[in-house]
Image 1: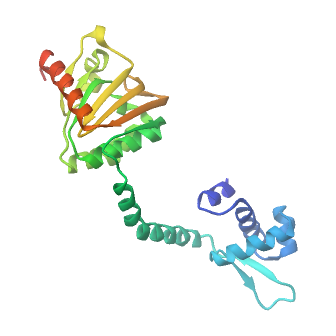
Image 2 (image 1 turned 60 degrees about the horizontal axis):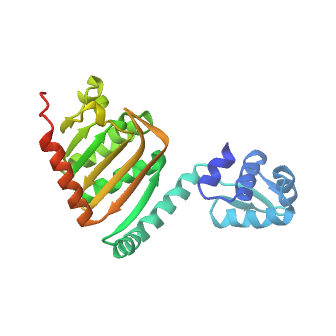
Length: 250
């Protein structure tokens, strides 16, 4: 478990093993550390010096034989803070490059719950109102609900975004769902329910598959099309449906 945590922080597998060996030994020679970690001495020597450069190990003096010891694990916090600081310095330039190549037309595909969170970030970044067809209330899925409540909703609100959703019959008539809907909505007749959903916002059209009422399938797929003309045409179809459907009595 500890090795995996260290690797996720950016250490190599050998560095993680050796750091853990140092914590257990308190200090030791290359032979001691190599034996304890089960790593060849040459690789141990190289990894020890990388840990020293990262500020996670040091040489103990004076000793007849070269002896090494670990820095206190609290140092790992500083190690991450330094990485965050480096990222913050480079982030503006990377964002500039990203925006520079952002085409007026493209198609992207996001997969899984992680992909859905990235999609939510994209929606918020546009700051545009959202218009949906075939809504399922999938944000109730426990894997994404916390993210929506803690982060997304506040950002939606701060951006002044609104949503108008045409729900599937099963979602729109689900009392536990609609009582939390603060936006405008209407409901499709039951015979037009589907397993998919569409959202239009700004110059984007997003097509979902793998959605159920108040839940998401593991392999949910969101196909995102950025095309101003296409988005305008989808909005015409959305408006036709909205105008044809009856008002909801709240």
